[in-house]
Length: 388
Image (cartoon, rainbow, N blue to C red; front, side, top):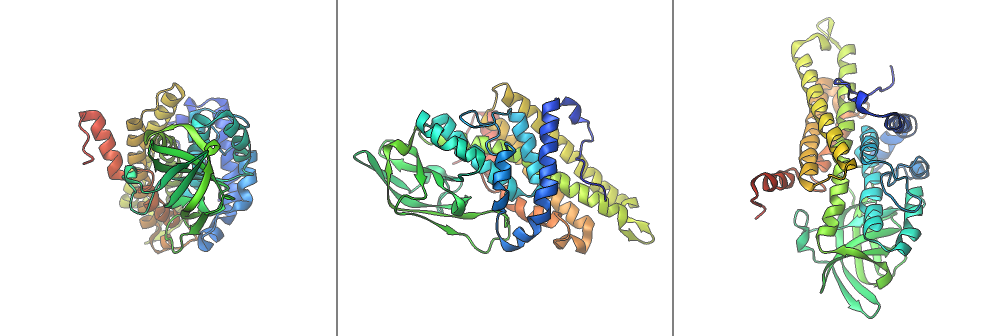
């Protein structure tokens, strides 16, 4: 069977420059040759292929668009292209890179001191250090402003207490970007694995994002020095700005999952015979394939325009929210449709749509649920916030 060559019905490839195409091909080959052969075993085991992390770093895929010491500094569009190719492999792979770059390296690069940037960014970019992002709590998901984690000043230190839940990279992380309520408002801290009182717990029994490390962060009187506070992170707007960077990557990434589902279903429909003919010859199967292709093409147009805007310095939350909202729902629909075309084979791990379908049930919820992004866009177009 021929290798994956992408989905580009509207010739969007013509709008990419040579460097963007080169980056895409590099990531596509990495996913095809290094990740695809091991994803099934890691999905079954509920583990992330940590052996690939140094290679992700050497290829410049960790914090690819971050500008700072040791960072690749690629364009926003190239970061999006990278996310699309990574998530064609698995949402867990894109999530790892997304958290490392957008939620750990980005706040250090934008809110940190020069010393913090020099210490952390080169190693995070190389993959020799791993980070996670601690915002969500068990009782505060869509409403992060209700966070209960607290940090109290104690001389030149802060005493940190609380827990964070559903944290990607939690158990493998060397440093956590943690958001806590203080007497001065919400602030961000770099909490190191070695700090006494900081521990993590793995979340077991996941149906979704199994090839990903998900856990809980626990802080029990952790003494965090003032030098580990991110001085530029003031208020809840700071972590939400981080999330906007990550949601941008999600909107691109899920196109890869959808394209893989479409490509798998198209190939299967051409080979699977019923009533002495391939099922691709049946009108209803063609209708499903055409609908998938149409929705993928629309999502590609959204993201390419969003990427060009970002590279021009235009990256408002509502634009990202519309793309995240539309594209994740689209990808989940494509995964379900592909599973339908595959019939009973679609529920086995011989084919990817079932795995993508399970993963996307998480992606449609995390970093802003479908409904929350609906209200973000709604507030933008009406001028009336409807969150309460």
